[in-house]
Image (cartoon, rainbow over all chains, first blue to last red; front, side, top):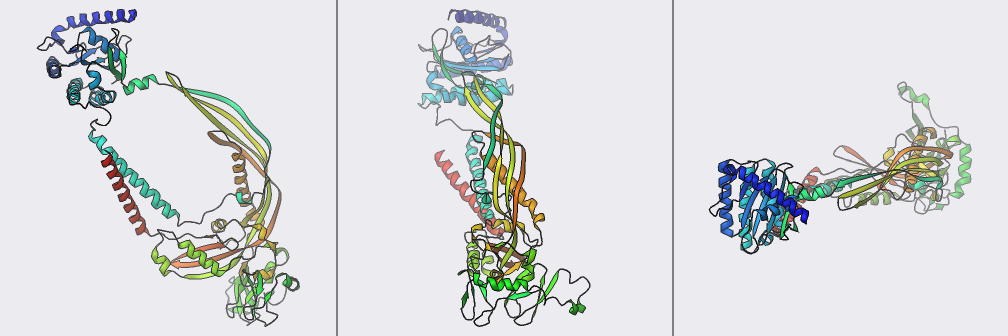
Length: 273
Length: 357
């Protein structure tokens, strides 16, 4: 734990130093003086960054729930969602006694992203909801449309929080479906209809054909005449194929509960874009 | 060449073999005769092979070479001329209907060793054809309604029966797989084995039809024949039926019998390779030994019908009643069924999806 704390401290000092260096470019603090969009890699223009930071501030105030986005270069050996939680705490995000809030962290070196949420966020952003959340902004990240992706994340966070405040946080059974997802069951119905129709009609057609050559003589085997003089099963060689499981799970972005170095409980996940 | 008609000793009418009673029956006076009782009479007839037969001298109207492959017989009952090809062995006179047997086709080296007498009669063949039409959804309704049988004939088809022992070996490459996982990796272990099987397998009575005129696939489709019903050949069994002698000798039919036996031997060897996910044959050597072949006549009902200018041939195993024959398809019904099933299944699934969604 001590090692983790030292590592965290070193990283955050570096982060704050960088923030200070690029303050004129990246710091667009909201009216409450809290900067919720930190962009070390200058992915957005100054105007885009200012607009996004203002948007995050508005959403945070509206729901009394901090929503932040931080872009760094490297994970420094951390898992993305765990680093997101450390940064969240070091930058003192969070509202109320439970430090309600959520953060999206991007590490550009290996194109990683991590999402972490605590307090009320653990209710608002369910495991299933986080999978849905990824579908709203990760495709845009993959296309390098960072402004689009960050704004989509902010809008999604706003929507998730509203949904939770109405007592129905996004979870199994109420995840909105895309037009493709809505159409998919009907496309499957059409394909199933085609397959059933084809199988049944072809089997009907097959009933009409009864003349078939016979290239075997199984019916004429003399009973009890089978005599095996030699039968040998010889082992030759063995191959073992190994595939990594961890990478798959990270790529799928499966959400999990975890504890930060300070002992605060979070829910979050990591992924690639 | 001799021509044999079986006459009723009681009334002189032409007698035939009855598949129901397995006896010779006179249709005129209802007298019945045991086949075995006619054997002596038959043997006597076999000795009398030469004499009346072809009168090629009257062939002044034939063109040169036209008689090739043709035989002309005179009916003993009415004197009418019966013309047939050189494989014709038994028929009925087209003028008086008397069943006749061309004795020369089944004598000497051409004499069949065994015969399976007809077990099923013409009525059974008609009933089997009617049954064949049932439960065929795409069979045009008008085919059943309009079509009528052009011909039904009970035919003894010449077959070569091969009794052989197959001996050899088969080698396979086979694999077994095992899967497991730990916290970081999924593992699939594939173990490869070399498999060897060597041995022998016996076959009795593998049939190959010896008539080039018969459709091979049609004949194979009505198998199997049960050789337990086979009896020593008597020409009396042919009375009332058609019969051909072979025009493909045993040597010509041997290779196909070997192929069938080889395929089945490989199959049986492979069945002994168990416990593997994949079994791939690598090399095989199957030899035939201790072979014996028999010339046999097997009973088959041939039914001909025509519809829309096309002939449809059905064959029924005269011993077991198995009937085969390809039928025409109603293309409109096929399209309607396809579209209807597609629409119904798609609609039902869509409703379920909508309700569930």
